[in-house]
Amino acid sequence: MARLRIGSRGSQLALWQAHHISALLRERGHEVELEIIKTTGDKITDVALAKVGTKGMFTKEIEEALAEGRVDLAVHSLKDLPTELSAGFEIAAITTRENPRDVFCSLHYANIEDLPRAARVGTSSLRRQAQLKAVRPDLDIHPLRGNVDTRLRKLEAGEYDAIILAAAGLNRLGKTQLVRQVIPAQVMCPAAGQGALGIEIRAGDAVTREHLSFLDDAAARATTTCERALLNQLGGGCQVPIGAFAEIRDGHLHLEAIVADPDGSRILRESRDGHDPIQLGKAVGDSLLQRGGDAILEAVYGQGIAVPQQP
Image (cartoon, rainbow, N blue to C red):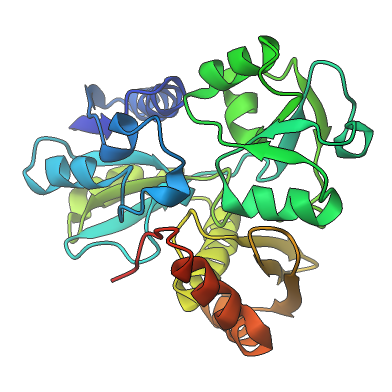
């Protein structure tokens, strides 16, 4: 069988993901090596992500290793991958999806509603901030960076009354002790692609693509393709106040999406059914833009909040 070299970020969660894929490949008889690669996003830890604005900030250096032939595949959190890949790369597989929702973590409070007035909540996501402010405009939102352990440690140390994280990462790492509420998508629409892993290879590498084909999950491919088509239509990267959540219901796709003002004063919601993932994502994106999403996003850019631009 093949010798496959995997490129991955070095965070605890990224390594879990890479080792997970490694184990599945080894079960198929492949020899697997892992190369840890530090990305721009890993090097910038003291600034909110939305203010950094580097396109592909968690993927660029890994793609360089792919292009140079130092690794054969890269394991990414799909939400970190730009919606249009750089020339020369393709997504060979999208794995079975973990729970894509966000979760509320706290030592003392059971849910968002139970938080006292002006409670301090940690998140560096404009998407989460906007949706929190929509239901609780009194909350004091503060930036929260670092890996999962760092974020949980800050919560336990009393720096925050609550923090918002992705369910998928906590489930994968088995660190769900402080999860108090899985937030419904109708309250906090997730990020496009959240909960799924994207396996990236060099474009046209048919041999590696074939080795990875068993990892590709049809439902995850359809739902995340729909969500990423919406994000692409809106011209947004992963740090824009845009949410997208697609599900397969009764044999067809259902997409819910939001565009929000960062202060939560205005949230545009759209939901629609369809069969073609890309057409559905584009249609919902167009509708949101026509209903005022374009003005919201232009205001976000104008506030000096740098956004990863699509090519």
